[in-house]
Image 1 (cartoon, rainbow, N blue to C red):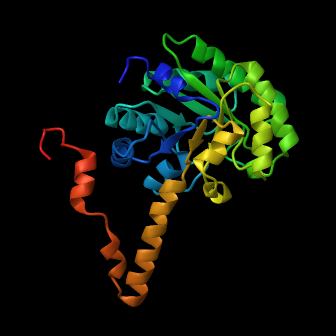
Image 2 (cartoon, rainbow, N blue to C red):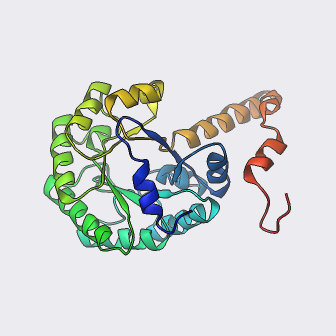
Length: 277
């Protein structure tokens, strides 16, 4: 891995030729995804919370998120980006400090959203833009490259409509965001509007109905990267749900016959720290 993971990560963002940003939830899943061909790894705030036995949205501290991110950075030789919720605080100053700490943890970049956690409402537009402005200034002051993505989450949470999202996108770009992310727009046509509204690379979330779109369809929209969010972790949890319900309700263990071969997993994870397989 290069000494500047931010520069390597930035180079992956090519509108119309999107890469898959694979969200992992522990060192093992990160190593598997990297071995299977991922160009970059991201944390997932929801998936990380699940590993701690907590629900999504505002239940993980910044220190916990940073320590988790460091684990993933240490596990793989490709760039790692952080899903850092609202920057772990309301003020622009907190967002700036989060950027600095994320860079110290070895991350190539982070996302900061405009949801006023722990609730589901959004920060006022002016404050949301000011937060990104402070975060971008902190990123530019770093001794290496760092890719900051500004998220407008209000369409997904129901706090505002696509027109308000587009206004925020314009503000985020002017504030210095390197990338833009408006998760779960109501339609693919609205997602295409996001792409046309900015000169910055746009992230799409392959979850829910958007998981039915192909990479080629995203490419035609001009998308630069496709993240998984917590979707892959939730697929894993669906396997647990289905298998456990069958076992505990019926005494039927046949779902376990679909387990991945141990050697396949071992080979993807590689040798242990002592060199042993």
